[in-house]
Length: 173
Image 1 (cartoon, rainbow, N blue to C red):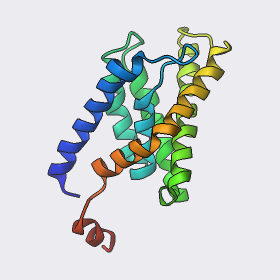
Image 2: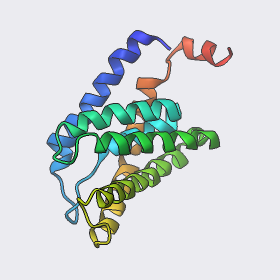
Image 3: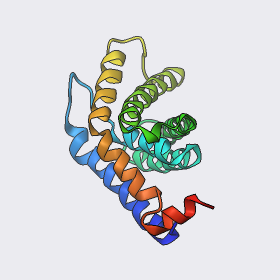
């Protein structure tokens, strides 16, 4: 992989998604639930690039997201790291080969991430997970991330995978 492009594309992608989340998309509300496109990007990254890069992108995105939130600092980084790693485990099943399955996996892993957020907040005494809001949040975040997953998967591939002639030669080594 061309490391110079990686160090340019990745920060641009992370900053763009975090800014979109906290300025534009985060202002939308469906049934009192705000979409989480950062979670979708972390899931897409794990599915496209594997568990190590998924966890790394999850951690970096979580640290960026935590700087805008009032939850304990590092909570988003922890959850996004776990979700990125678990999404990367799906790479073993070669989900990235089938586009539709990878799009659905982004939605499913987003739902897992929301449940992890609720569980962690319950353990920390921040939130009650037995509210009706949990089901609404899981369904809204999952469905919205499935809808935008083609864009997120493309962005993850563009940022993390080698492009052009180099990728053909790299896969044969």
